Length: 141
Image 1 (cartoon, rainbow, N blue to C red):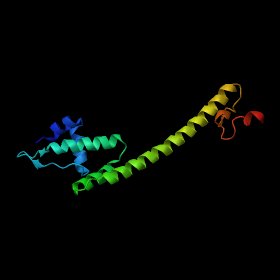
Image 2 (cartoon, helix red, strand yellow; image 1 turned 120 degrees about the horizontal axis):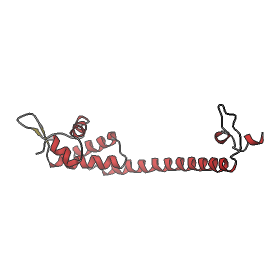
Image 3 (cartoon, rainbow, N blue to C red; image 1 turned 90 degrees about the vertical axis):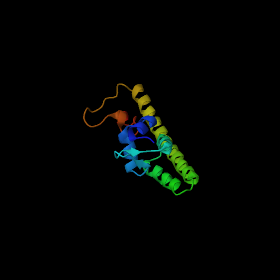
Image 4 (tube, rainbow, N blue to C red; image 1 turned 180 degrees about the vertical axis):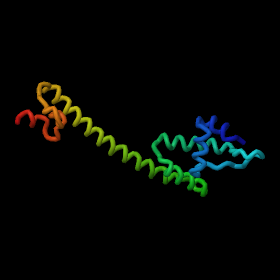
């Protein structure tokens, strides 16, 4: 049996981190010592490793809690994990596409700005390099 401090150290967490996961219902002590300290078994360390790995893969604590609840009900959450992973991959694909488009827009602006360093801005609330229209349109006016 491990106390919060010993468990936290073994898991690479702070004792407050362990207590936080407990408050969220992700972890439960097996017993209390005569002095009232929470005591955890070896499975608590496995649970903390599971939680940390799931977080490292982008799962939210809410998603992790649903998986933990399924495990505690006695059925492996494999189908749920696959679904969450599919959703995370799809989200990343969308974000990568958005970031790629943003990078292309920025690179295009930068290339135009570097090719036209003498274009004058009005010095107030706009810059032709950031103009929402075609960056070359302002220099032709």
